[in-house]
Image (cartoon, rainbow, N blue to C red):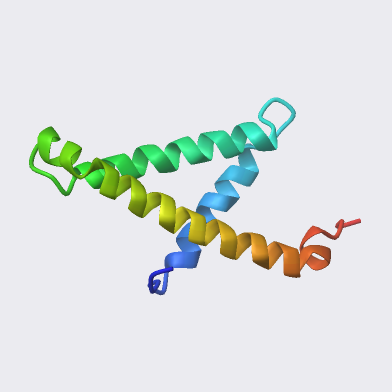
Length: 96
């Protein structure tokens, strides 16, 4: 993963808290996760579009853009899965 700025984890935590607040009987973990992934994909498509002058330029770099975001997401997901595997008992311990 790339170097992160001082507020990186604070911004990430704000998104996690928002997602957690959305979970209820109707909006299950899976539904909230799907909405979160869609929002991330939509935002990153917009971020990518901001770097181009027109749709043709953007289309020409579509595969490179996809490769970048998929690679970075995979690294982040692997890092977090490993963290949960290593700390499963303390992270998933019931708060009873």
